[in-house]
Length: 195
Image 1 (cartoon, one colour):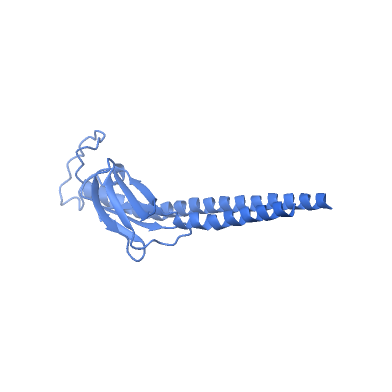
Image 2 (cartoon, rainbow, N blue to C red; image 1 turned 30 degrees about the vertical axis):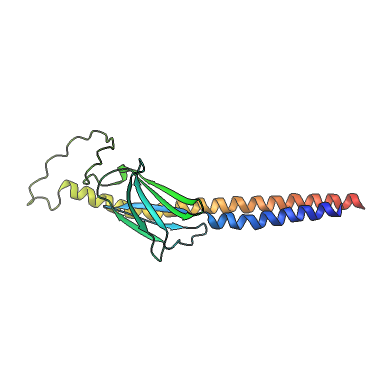
């Protein structure tokens, strides 16, 4: 009976030792569009930013567009030259990577469209009014609104990402607590039977 206790204790300790290692190797990537730039950062669960990580930027068909590296704050940026769907991949090695998709609809309509992207038919915008009566063209106004909306949505998207990570950690800790509770109950029952 005493040997059974030590086996269960060893299994529990191994599980607890394995859990932080899995957590430490997990990596996340967040990105948003601001004007003609894709900005983002790479981070680990808990919020610590990943420095000097290579982020590959490809089109959705995996054709490489550019490779950037995160700075000392874990941040990166990329100037978009055409309107397309982009895949961002942060690779920290040993098979641990994070991926994020930027849809072409998030990018400005003023950018030239990638030939392989299938875009919905859009009616031509009405001709801009005389510059004396209007200080911005319609496209400039649309771009300005898109930048403002992106700037306002970025913190909300970051909060959502952080909230989802907290839920994951909460679930893991709850599972560990449940395991300890069940093991404690089993030890209690085994001790009562031995008397």
